[in-house]
Length: 184
Image (cartoon, rainbow, N blue to C red; front, side):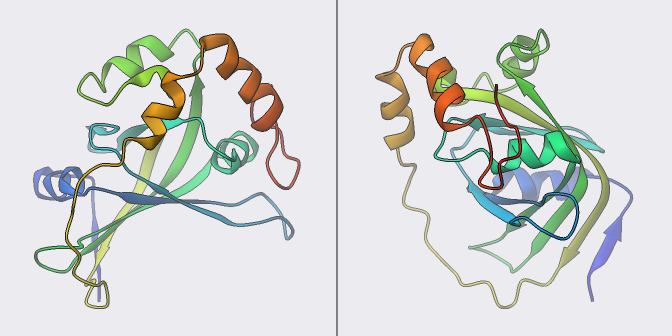
């Protein structure tokens, strides 16, 4: 049986920040549409802001499901699994907002990730107000060895100008696979 926590305390914060990757789950409102689960990685792109708020850098990618779902209804769950050491899973349930590059709040929020990889390819900061923090055993999660970061995403973005990225968002990230608006 898992535990519920009042917030992200020091021990949970240490666990979360030690993970090399996490998963983000969102869904559109109503009975139709696709539920989305996205893996997120790259050390330095996730931050615990306080006991009830977290944020991560959202990079340009092949889709914009998370952004579209958050704009539609704000619902989000984040999951952190221990792939090494003692087994554990931590889930953060909350409401997220998208702070795009053109939002006046973006520079200050992006500053939280000063130790992150190149932020040129970041299209937004996702900020989540966490209302439920829980853990579970993680006994079924396999043990895996961390070999290092992939630099392919950063390399791909470094070849694009800011204008290229604006066009990318407008043409390839404008809507979700369910045609929900993401980036205009």
